[in-house]
Image 1: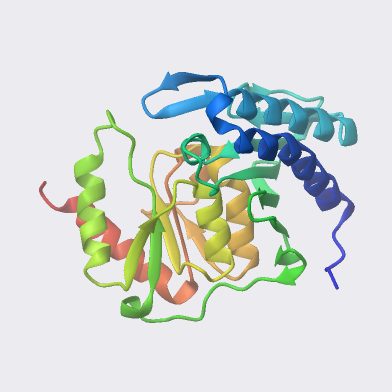
Image 2 (image 1 turned 180 degrees about the vertical axis):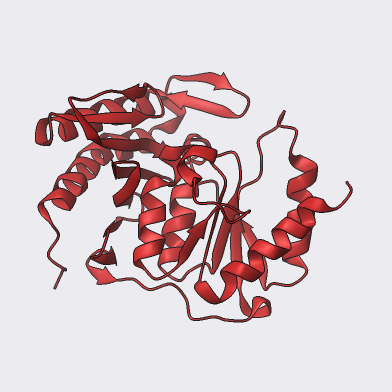
Amino acid sequence: MAYPRSALLNVMVAAARKAARKLVRDFGEVEHLQVSKKGPADFVSTADTTAERTLRAELRKARPRFGFLTEEEGAIPGTDTSNRWIIDPLDGTTNFLHGLPHFAISIALERDGEAIAGVIYAPAYDEMFWAEKGAGAYLNGRRLRVSARRQLEDSLFVTGIPYRRRDDHPLFLRQLAAVMAVSAGVRRSGSAALDLAYVAAGRYDGFWETGLYAWDIAAGMVLVREAGGDVSEIDGGRNMLGSGDILAATHPLHATLAKILREAAKEKS
């Protein structure tokens, strides 16, 4: 039996499912999509913009006073200054455009600067992750907990590789080498939202990345916390939505992984 969701989460789940219908149809005909380049390795497709319009319309219909922060349109103020939706209609756009089914819709509700509810839907897998502050994290109605692994050598981590033309590749490579040397492995999936959802589900033991945006991580942060994990910036700060730097892991591994990443950052390239 599925866990009974709150009215708020029902709104978010329904919006994600509606946006996903057209997204899945477009994924089936990915070679026909009109694609334009927004920047280095950063694409926008008709599927992306259509999904965002659907999400905004559905969420506005349910909560007309809430504002938005979106990938395509930026900040859209609402008359309710405490609440705003943070949405990414297609996290994993490059995967999508290459025919890889690893992509997701991400919706978070931010209240007074704090992400308090999140939904991440992977339509190709029909996996719906959701969480709300104080109510736990779930996958298709099943309660989620982060993994119980305590040793680095047994742990599997996931990260994001900086896009080309960014100047932080040497730092990333040092951090990657440091984590690879002490862990069971490191993966790169191409979707920060799903990376965080998978940490919440215990599939990965930790995730780190820098240079992200609020819409990449807001929903996933709620999931990890509600599944019993820890989320911070790599330097220990808590302004992840502002900085775009994030480290999410199980409590036994979080501090150790943070130390490894910080020490690697200090090394000479």
